[in-house]
Image (cartoon, rainbow, N blue to C red; front, side, top):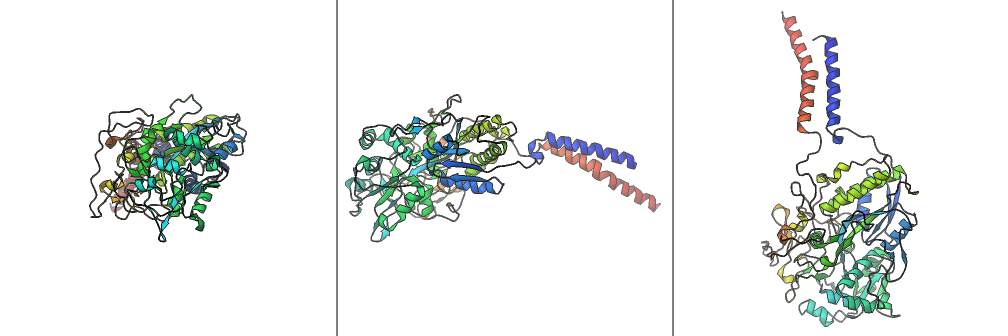
Length: 559
């Protein structure tokens, strides 16, 4: 082969290789680095630890996010007043707060909601007996409701003794701790009260049967044992203070988990006391009814009445979702292309790969159908500004999110809910209470050591008696401490529902969510046939001719 011919063939080969690489898809080429601007958000402190986790993760990608966990009500106001680029809220805009009458609207700013995280509203407490903190208190829903409406005021109350199978606590005044600011956790709790204990809540809320972000301290009385604190950190700081023995608060599970404080096990509809682990929350939310009308301003928001009474034994009743609020109008005066790009990439990370990190710190990852719905909402940022880079193909193929709720090849199955451990028999009324660690398992499937915000492992991470890891990373319980995992309780043929609330004939052993378009066979990178062609072309044109030429030259010289 002459030098001229060889150069021509190489040029053709390189051109073909470049063409094939482009045809292989976006994963085969390196895109130019996007341009970002600092973005600011505010709102839910309930979701604050999850958002902080994602903010830290995207910082390595040069995406700068400042998030202020100032409460869901203030977050909605900040967004409406254009003081923020995005908000985070537990409830949608309602025109006005149904209990206080406070204005609650976007004031004309365009918006869309997208689910970003699930979790459980927990009830951490500080009760000590003989100088030792009690860590396995159980409460029925009615008992809990009466504590926060000042109907039960002492830890030795007969109702608490009954919930704990006759184990009486000493005479310690109960100090219910509520939020002083407009808070999503207050909305979560009062929404549950309206649904499950309307009479108790109406009496406490001045005769109004409506949920609210603003808790009526001491049910409107001038005096009482309740204490109000600002922010999730304020609540936990009070709970940890020296004068707080007897206190019980309401907060997202991640806060007491990080602080090493116990939370009450709540009695569910199936008759078991459970904790707000990522598994129990995932099970509970299979009954959530999601607004699936894209034309509705409240698209993707939740209705939780069926969650509260989910008959699965593993349910944690006060489970819910939290939402980001994003601007969708092309003429939004607060937004620029670099800001929209930063918000797009931040939210894509949060609802995709970011979900894998939040279970062990006290939240529960989104199911696949809501991941895809959220990514569809993220795409609206690109629709508002075509200069924003967003590969919408991820909406149909989310396999690289590494979300514990779904696995390749089974797009309609909520894996985390399916493998959730069943509660121990000592967590039933009339039995127990169980040991401190029973039912606390919260690692990711196959994981070891529960991560807490800020790193490290939490106390009671499910490594002692009553918790462990079964085959294929399936958590199990060992109630008798003999080292042999107990067999899961029978599902009982309980019908379950997808995220849209529709019931099916399946049992809790086959929990599923809304069918999705997750591609079980997709692979990242170029298709195998294209890769083989490029490799063959490279070897056949760029490598083989020089080798052949060298061998031919050697033969000529040997002659």
